[in-house]
Each structure stands twice: as structure tokens, then as C-alpha cells.
Image (cartoon, rainbow, N blue to C red; front, side):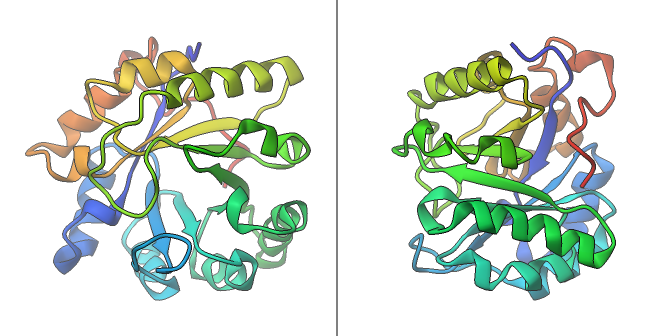
Length: 241
């Protein structure tokens, strides 16, 4: 079970894009730990969202780590563009990568070339087995467990995902790895305690945060799902992005 304060990563997919810089500044001021950016290409998922130019604009609006989630086909073609735009964490999907090991190391190498660390992460859709991580798990900093089918914000949490999170936490613990678990999709103040109990380290929350009347209160309530969450602080650190 997670014993430390968790990180909260508001997803700008649910923000007001007409005033995006203000929204990013507002959740930064409200205590967010990361900013989550959902990149969709209209092919891997049935939606089209943003590209490197928007990531660059968000980079200028906050000093928080940018958690860039690539829901795109052949993500290796775009890694450099997003790295140069300011991504601190680059997440690719198991289902979208033919050569996943190569892509994970390419992400790290891009960071080295830019003189900073970029964390390599991998994501799984709800119906994708954890067995797909068998070889790659020691080579990534973070696993993003999708708790909805990717493509749209505002979906309901898939309850069966909890068991996947538990199994992944047990696996990581047994191997003695520092790999963190991020959960994305349908995260609410109500279900956050169960998600954290299952083993999550980072909660992505778009609709829950950006439709709330008080960002600070909502972020604090989400972080309070952790047994140590009410003590303050930013939680256990991944190797710094």
C-alpha cells in the first residue's frame, strides 16, 4: 500500500483552452505536482488534441514537470519534438510501439542530449495484460495504467482496473524497483482512496479538477486519499524529470 503523499497531475484535456495559460497557472498555484498533457492523433485513439506547440506554450506557463502522454501511433517519430518542447516525462503505449525497449532508451538519450533528465514511461489500455511489461519494466521510470479507454475525458472509472494496479504494485515491490504507478481515467475524490490503496503513486485528474469551483480544495482532497497525504509535501520522488 502507498504510504507517502501521492502526486496530483491535472490533465489539461478538461481545461478551458481559451484561457489555457491561466488554467495552468491556476492549478500550479493550487498545489498540483505535475501537469498532464494528453496527445491524441485521431488514429491510435478516436480524438485529435494537441501537439508540440501547445506543450511549449504550457512549458512557458509553469515550472511544474510536464507529464506528456503520447496516445499516438509510432510515437518514436515525435519524441524529439515533444522533448524539445519541454516534456519532462514521455509516456508511450505498449500497444503503439513495435520496438518498446528501443523507444524507452531513446527517450532517456533525448534527455541526455538536451542536458536534462526526461523520464521514460509506458502506458497500458484497460484490456492490455500486465504481461506485456515482462521485459520492459526495469527500463522505465513509470507505468501509466489507463482506467478508462483512452480518447476522451470525463469517462467513468473501470473498477476492474483496481486489481491490475494491485498486481502491478506487488510485481514492482517483489522486483525491488523504484518504478512508479500512475492512474489516468475517471479519478474522483470519491474513488481516489481505493486507487491509492491499490498502489498508485500519481493520480491524473482532469474533469475532477477543472470542473470544480475550487482547484486548491479539490487537489488537496485528492492528495488526502494517501495515508500520509494530509501531512503535506510532494511525495516520493521519481528520478527527477
